[in-house]
Length: 46
Length: 224
Image (cartoon, rainbow over all chains, first blue to last red; front, side):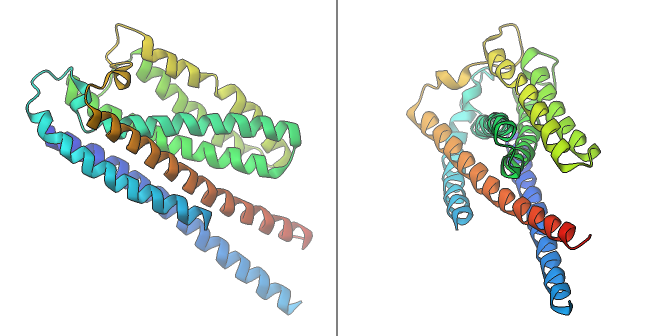
């Protein structure tokens, strides 16, 4: 790997790592919203 | 709203850091001696990411003390969210550090004081989540995790002190010896950008965990 390759690799590691973490957080938020909607639906029925 | 402000500001500053970092690359080409590590653009990512990781563990330490004192779930949520961010940023600084080591010294890893204490830090906070996963009682889990979060912080000053250990591959206090204003500005911009990103993600994570906690309470009161 040449010098530029290492620089690109370091940039990629940081950005891919952060995007994966943010993606996980967004998925958690979606799951929570679903759970809240299900709870509201359950409360309506009772 | 608060999350959006922090994330927007950090995104702007991260783009500025990238632009300033790219401007440093031509000066890299003229440097023959690889010991001049401050010429490497990786430096301006590695240092801010490492700073945020250590800062995140400081927040875990403070939130854990606050939990043991107040015994409110909020401080446990803050500690857990910050520990998660600390693990993410420690993973990133270990990986960028490894790439930088290969680039500057021709090896991916060396068992010197700095690198080893950083890896130990990562292991400690991964263990923090394993501990949480194995305790089912919420109060007991929060109490044990708070004690672990306080004890685990012992490694953070060790990681910082290893900057001043000689005879190791890691360059030590290079950040204090930058010789161009452009380098200092790039580094400071990167540190501010990643700190804002940390706070944006911390507030978002706290919000998610608070919602999850409320849902679990509702389910409990509803009989599961």
